[in-house]
Image: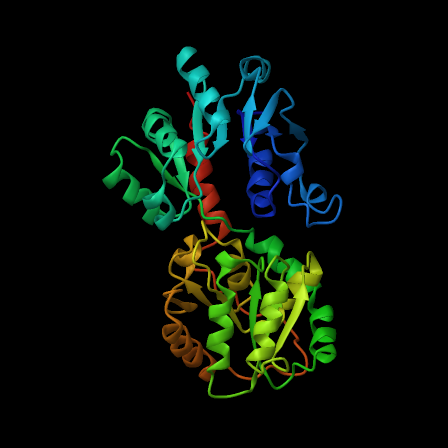
Length: 375
């Protein structure tokens, strides 16, 4: 049997949008995973919701301290000696990545070193402060940086350094796993259609935090200007603006058309993706936006802020982009997509066609073939 290469992964927390990728790493490599912000582990999820999906052991970096929301690690050299990895995968440009980078050079590059950078094109252009300094120091001196799109990687090579080995991995789920779960949630979807009297309406969906950066007031204003009333807007999520947004809905006389559902997870969330016909992400700041991938996998058309990293997933065939500072543009594009959308029927029999322009396997296989080409 061929021996698997050893990979050591450092990541801030166990993020839901990383689990499919991490499970693939655990399949293709001999893995060790270490997280360093356990309290940040998406606490809105119920206990064990994320860990139960993992095919790998979860470890935490315990030797260190947090200062000004940044983690400073001790004893990383001992851990690297203990694990003896062929490949080390870090996340972003922070103190953990810097410490790993120092040992990488001190030990004569005995392992391959990569880091993930989830910046959108807008984020990477605006990057400043210590992360900018670390990026400029580290990026061109390691084996590669994994960006969420070719667009970002090409900009980096042209504007920062041609020496940077830019790799690509969008923040996406496994098509097969995610769509199987969508299928499991169909019965619940049909019960929700009945519960909220959604049949004969066109369903618009938003999933995410109810926060200023998500720009939901723009979406509410756009909906208030629609020429027809045969639509419903479903807002899934919680956050500091919940009360304010409810007041806005009331002042716009849209209470009959808009439902605030709070946070959802698992099949309770996926059931709404089945129901959604148009998904809108109006954020003014969004490094990526994993919800866009989720909506496309469920066969929903997407209207996405052009400032979101996930804008690279949207094509003429599966949706459109808009300027999140221009409400008139959103109104125009929302009306155009709704005109082509049939009203929802009283029940859904099958999961709709997948609207993603590429598959999870395509992207992961390409990336991992490069990571596995170790010294």
